[in-house]
Length: 318
Image (tube, rainbow, N blue to C red):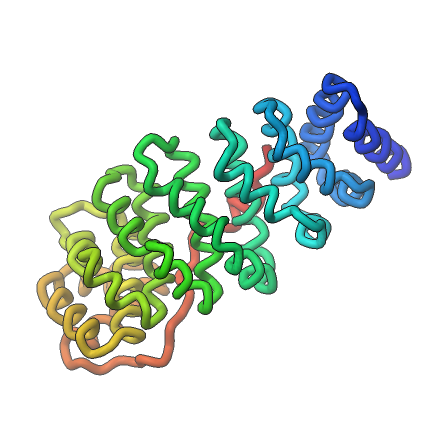
């Protein structure tokens, strides 16, 4: 372990070198070590790498940025406190998200946010208060030219933000609902639609979402996903049910009425999930069915609808 500690200190010391080549070589090695050797991650963080890596995200070299962003992502798996306690770390991520010409940098930064948000409840209000980060994540999912990987990583970060109830109104205010509804309508890729509907289900868990959903035609789009003729995946349909259920619970009478009317049109799809969905999906479908049929339901209970793949994503290093 002492050898690993000395190696980490030596490489981190080179990050302050006046030679760009020396810095680049050190970054490449730190990226590889942090990817393949989990034991070295806290050693790299303890050696003071995070401030240098954060500052590097402001640089002009895409290669250097990519290595720095990837190393930060790898460190976020087990050294989250070192990242979040570093002054200017979130500002550096925000800058890279909105300004880097490299999709790889954008993806690593968004993935780092997701890693932090999923692992620690206390980070959610902190990151959620950074409106520039939220705005940039939403800009990524509305960019028709954004790579699919960038969109998926941005959606997962947004999902982590929306897990904190007080962040949901902020997302609504920044236009998250029309952005997500538009993405669901225009993108036929199952993975992206699954992630977008999961985020929308979370955001629907605040009263501010009702008007935004109405203006964006969200209830109609969610209803279409429950129509058995669309061939939507089970996860998409369960997310749609969760979104409608949260909207009925958190919205006013108009929202509840709209959900009931749409639910009556796709009764077969909802009923199918009560029989063939996952354990959580069956429960939520049954609750939505109760609201659709007789107007009753537990309005005070709004639960998180988690990504099924979050544990796999947490183990991702590059």
